[in-house]
Length: 203
Ligand SMILES: Cc1cc2nc3c(=O)[nH]c(=O)nc-3n(C[C@H](O)[C@H](O)[C@H](O)COP(=O)(O)O)c2cc1C
Image (cartoon, rainbow, N blue to C red; front, side, top):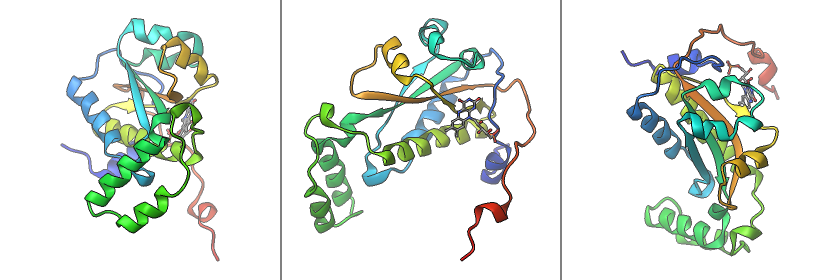
């Protein structure tokens, strides 16, 4: 039976031990689809993903991964940002789509378009909100994995540039995190959290 959204959010854990059995292709597609549907600032959708699905490809990043469980997962999703998403032509394209779909007015698009944007991706300085956008997409994947009975764990990288090199990725991409995904071989209890009173700031 399908899990309710409340159950998915409540039961998700960072999983650090995986069964070796492979993911179903349709499940992996649903996970990617969950990222594709994520919201982003000005709908820029700056996320890109590299899917490492076999031993050979996972082996390429072995030298950069300090937590061995990552490479034991049947699929490792390398989560990247694309500098091209911040170039003038791409931002204008996304704006046009939003105008065409009646999301924003032409005046609002004109206002945003007046800012000087880099023409070439080499000139792009990735803005901090790019990481917010990518974070939402990655968490969509983590929640979809949970909904499908799979487990995942966000893993930040000590040397993302090294993974970029090891995978021989295009210069436009910036590696930000990896998300190993597979059937959980552990059922961890809930991890500690701050109390409600510690996260709500009363005025
Ligand atoms: C941005 C981010 C980076 C993380 N990096 C790592 C990591 O490098 N290695 C790891 O084992 N867990 C990592 N985690 C998982 C956290 O440790 C975990 O979410 C936290 O302890 C709460 O546990 P839970 O996810 O099971 O609720 C990361 C989580 C996030 C959101």
